[in-house]
Length: 368
Image (cartoon, rainbow, N blue to C red; front, side):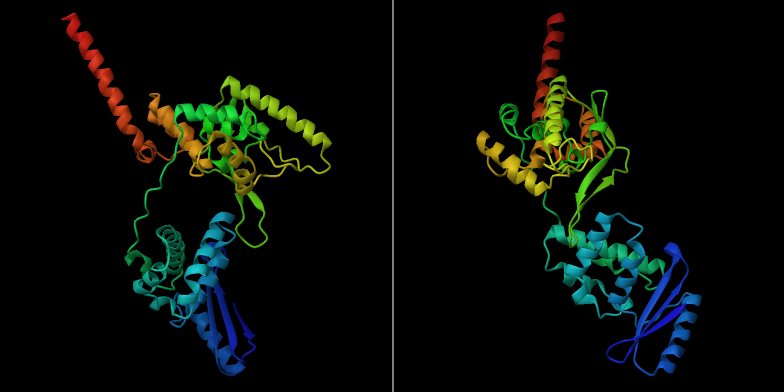
């Protein structure tokens, strides 16, 4: 099927499609000439679509528009915003007029050269997905992303609290509004996006059942949505200590009293909502509630929300817990990931292991 639209500059936009669903192929071409000639060109493009060939003058922008339109209903909102935003901000202006089958690795490398290592990786994942789609739909023969050089992303500096600092934080949390959020975060090791999405119905038999995460939209207009966790390791059950269960019960009672008095309340069943029942944004969580606690504890600003998750993992490993147990609690994809992330703990564990082994050997010597 072909459509012909006259543009403001007198040229014609020809759009040809074949197939349905994820097999649908689009060819877009701007044509200069008469309407009769544009119709003839449309028939040529239809023939090319039928035979699996493609127009050599399709631009990067035309391919991008076709790709983003095709995938937006088949991927998550977060992934769509990541793909669309990364390419529009960092590649579209540079590559838009280059024919899609003429884009070279050096052209892509030029886009990467202006970005931080982390943003380069984000753009690379988006471009790789776009070019893979273009290959599957016959627009290009090879993916130019496979021949570019990627920078090494520096290992993030992991900040944790020691046992004394963790106890101090818990004590201050008991005095501050919504302080239970941070005690809960440190005991469970959940990500902020996970505990902010947690519902009262997710507390079952003294365990927190993690099945989803909260996301705030990056697109214009904002808003939030909940994303279901897909992998078996990310969907998990975390036992809660008796003390934390007791404080959660008191938190729920206070929440119900506030809800009765509130004129506006969105009943989302959230354990840690804002004042009208909706999810707390990470910015507000840090600024309104976490920052005063850090100040009272006399901790520096280098302590972040994720420091609580890292503290949970570090204290468990230093207490001798099996790394597999820690990995399951955190929802890591593998034990190797846990060990790699918290490798700073391993020297202490090895020292403890050496001391334990030496004690065993001394007992053996005394028996002999």
